[in-house]
Image 1: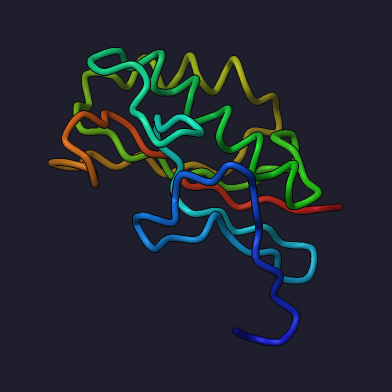
Image 2: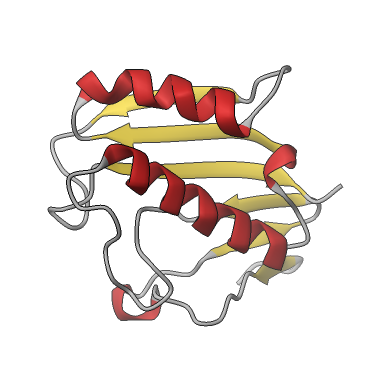
Length: 130
């Protein structure tokens, strides 16, 4: 591990079975692993429900950011991975629900699949602590 990096820990943490860390704080920057619709006990939330999956993924982001000393309002970059681009209108609704101007930088990518077949969306963010 590079000097000056601090791993982010949440409890309970559903990531260890996948050998993934929640993320790292580097200086005042927070880099999270992609967050999907996985509950604290490792179960998928909202199978076939994009809105429920976005809500759970954002709750996971909020939890991990809080553990890092940050919050959703400090996100300046988000990457959104969608298995079905017809859900893009739900991405717009997510932006309106969770963010305000100036909007975070954003990349939305259509993907064939995610790590688990029931997942419809994964969110990857970079934030600051100050």
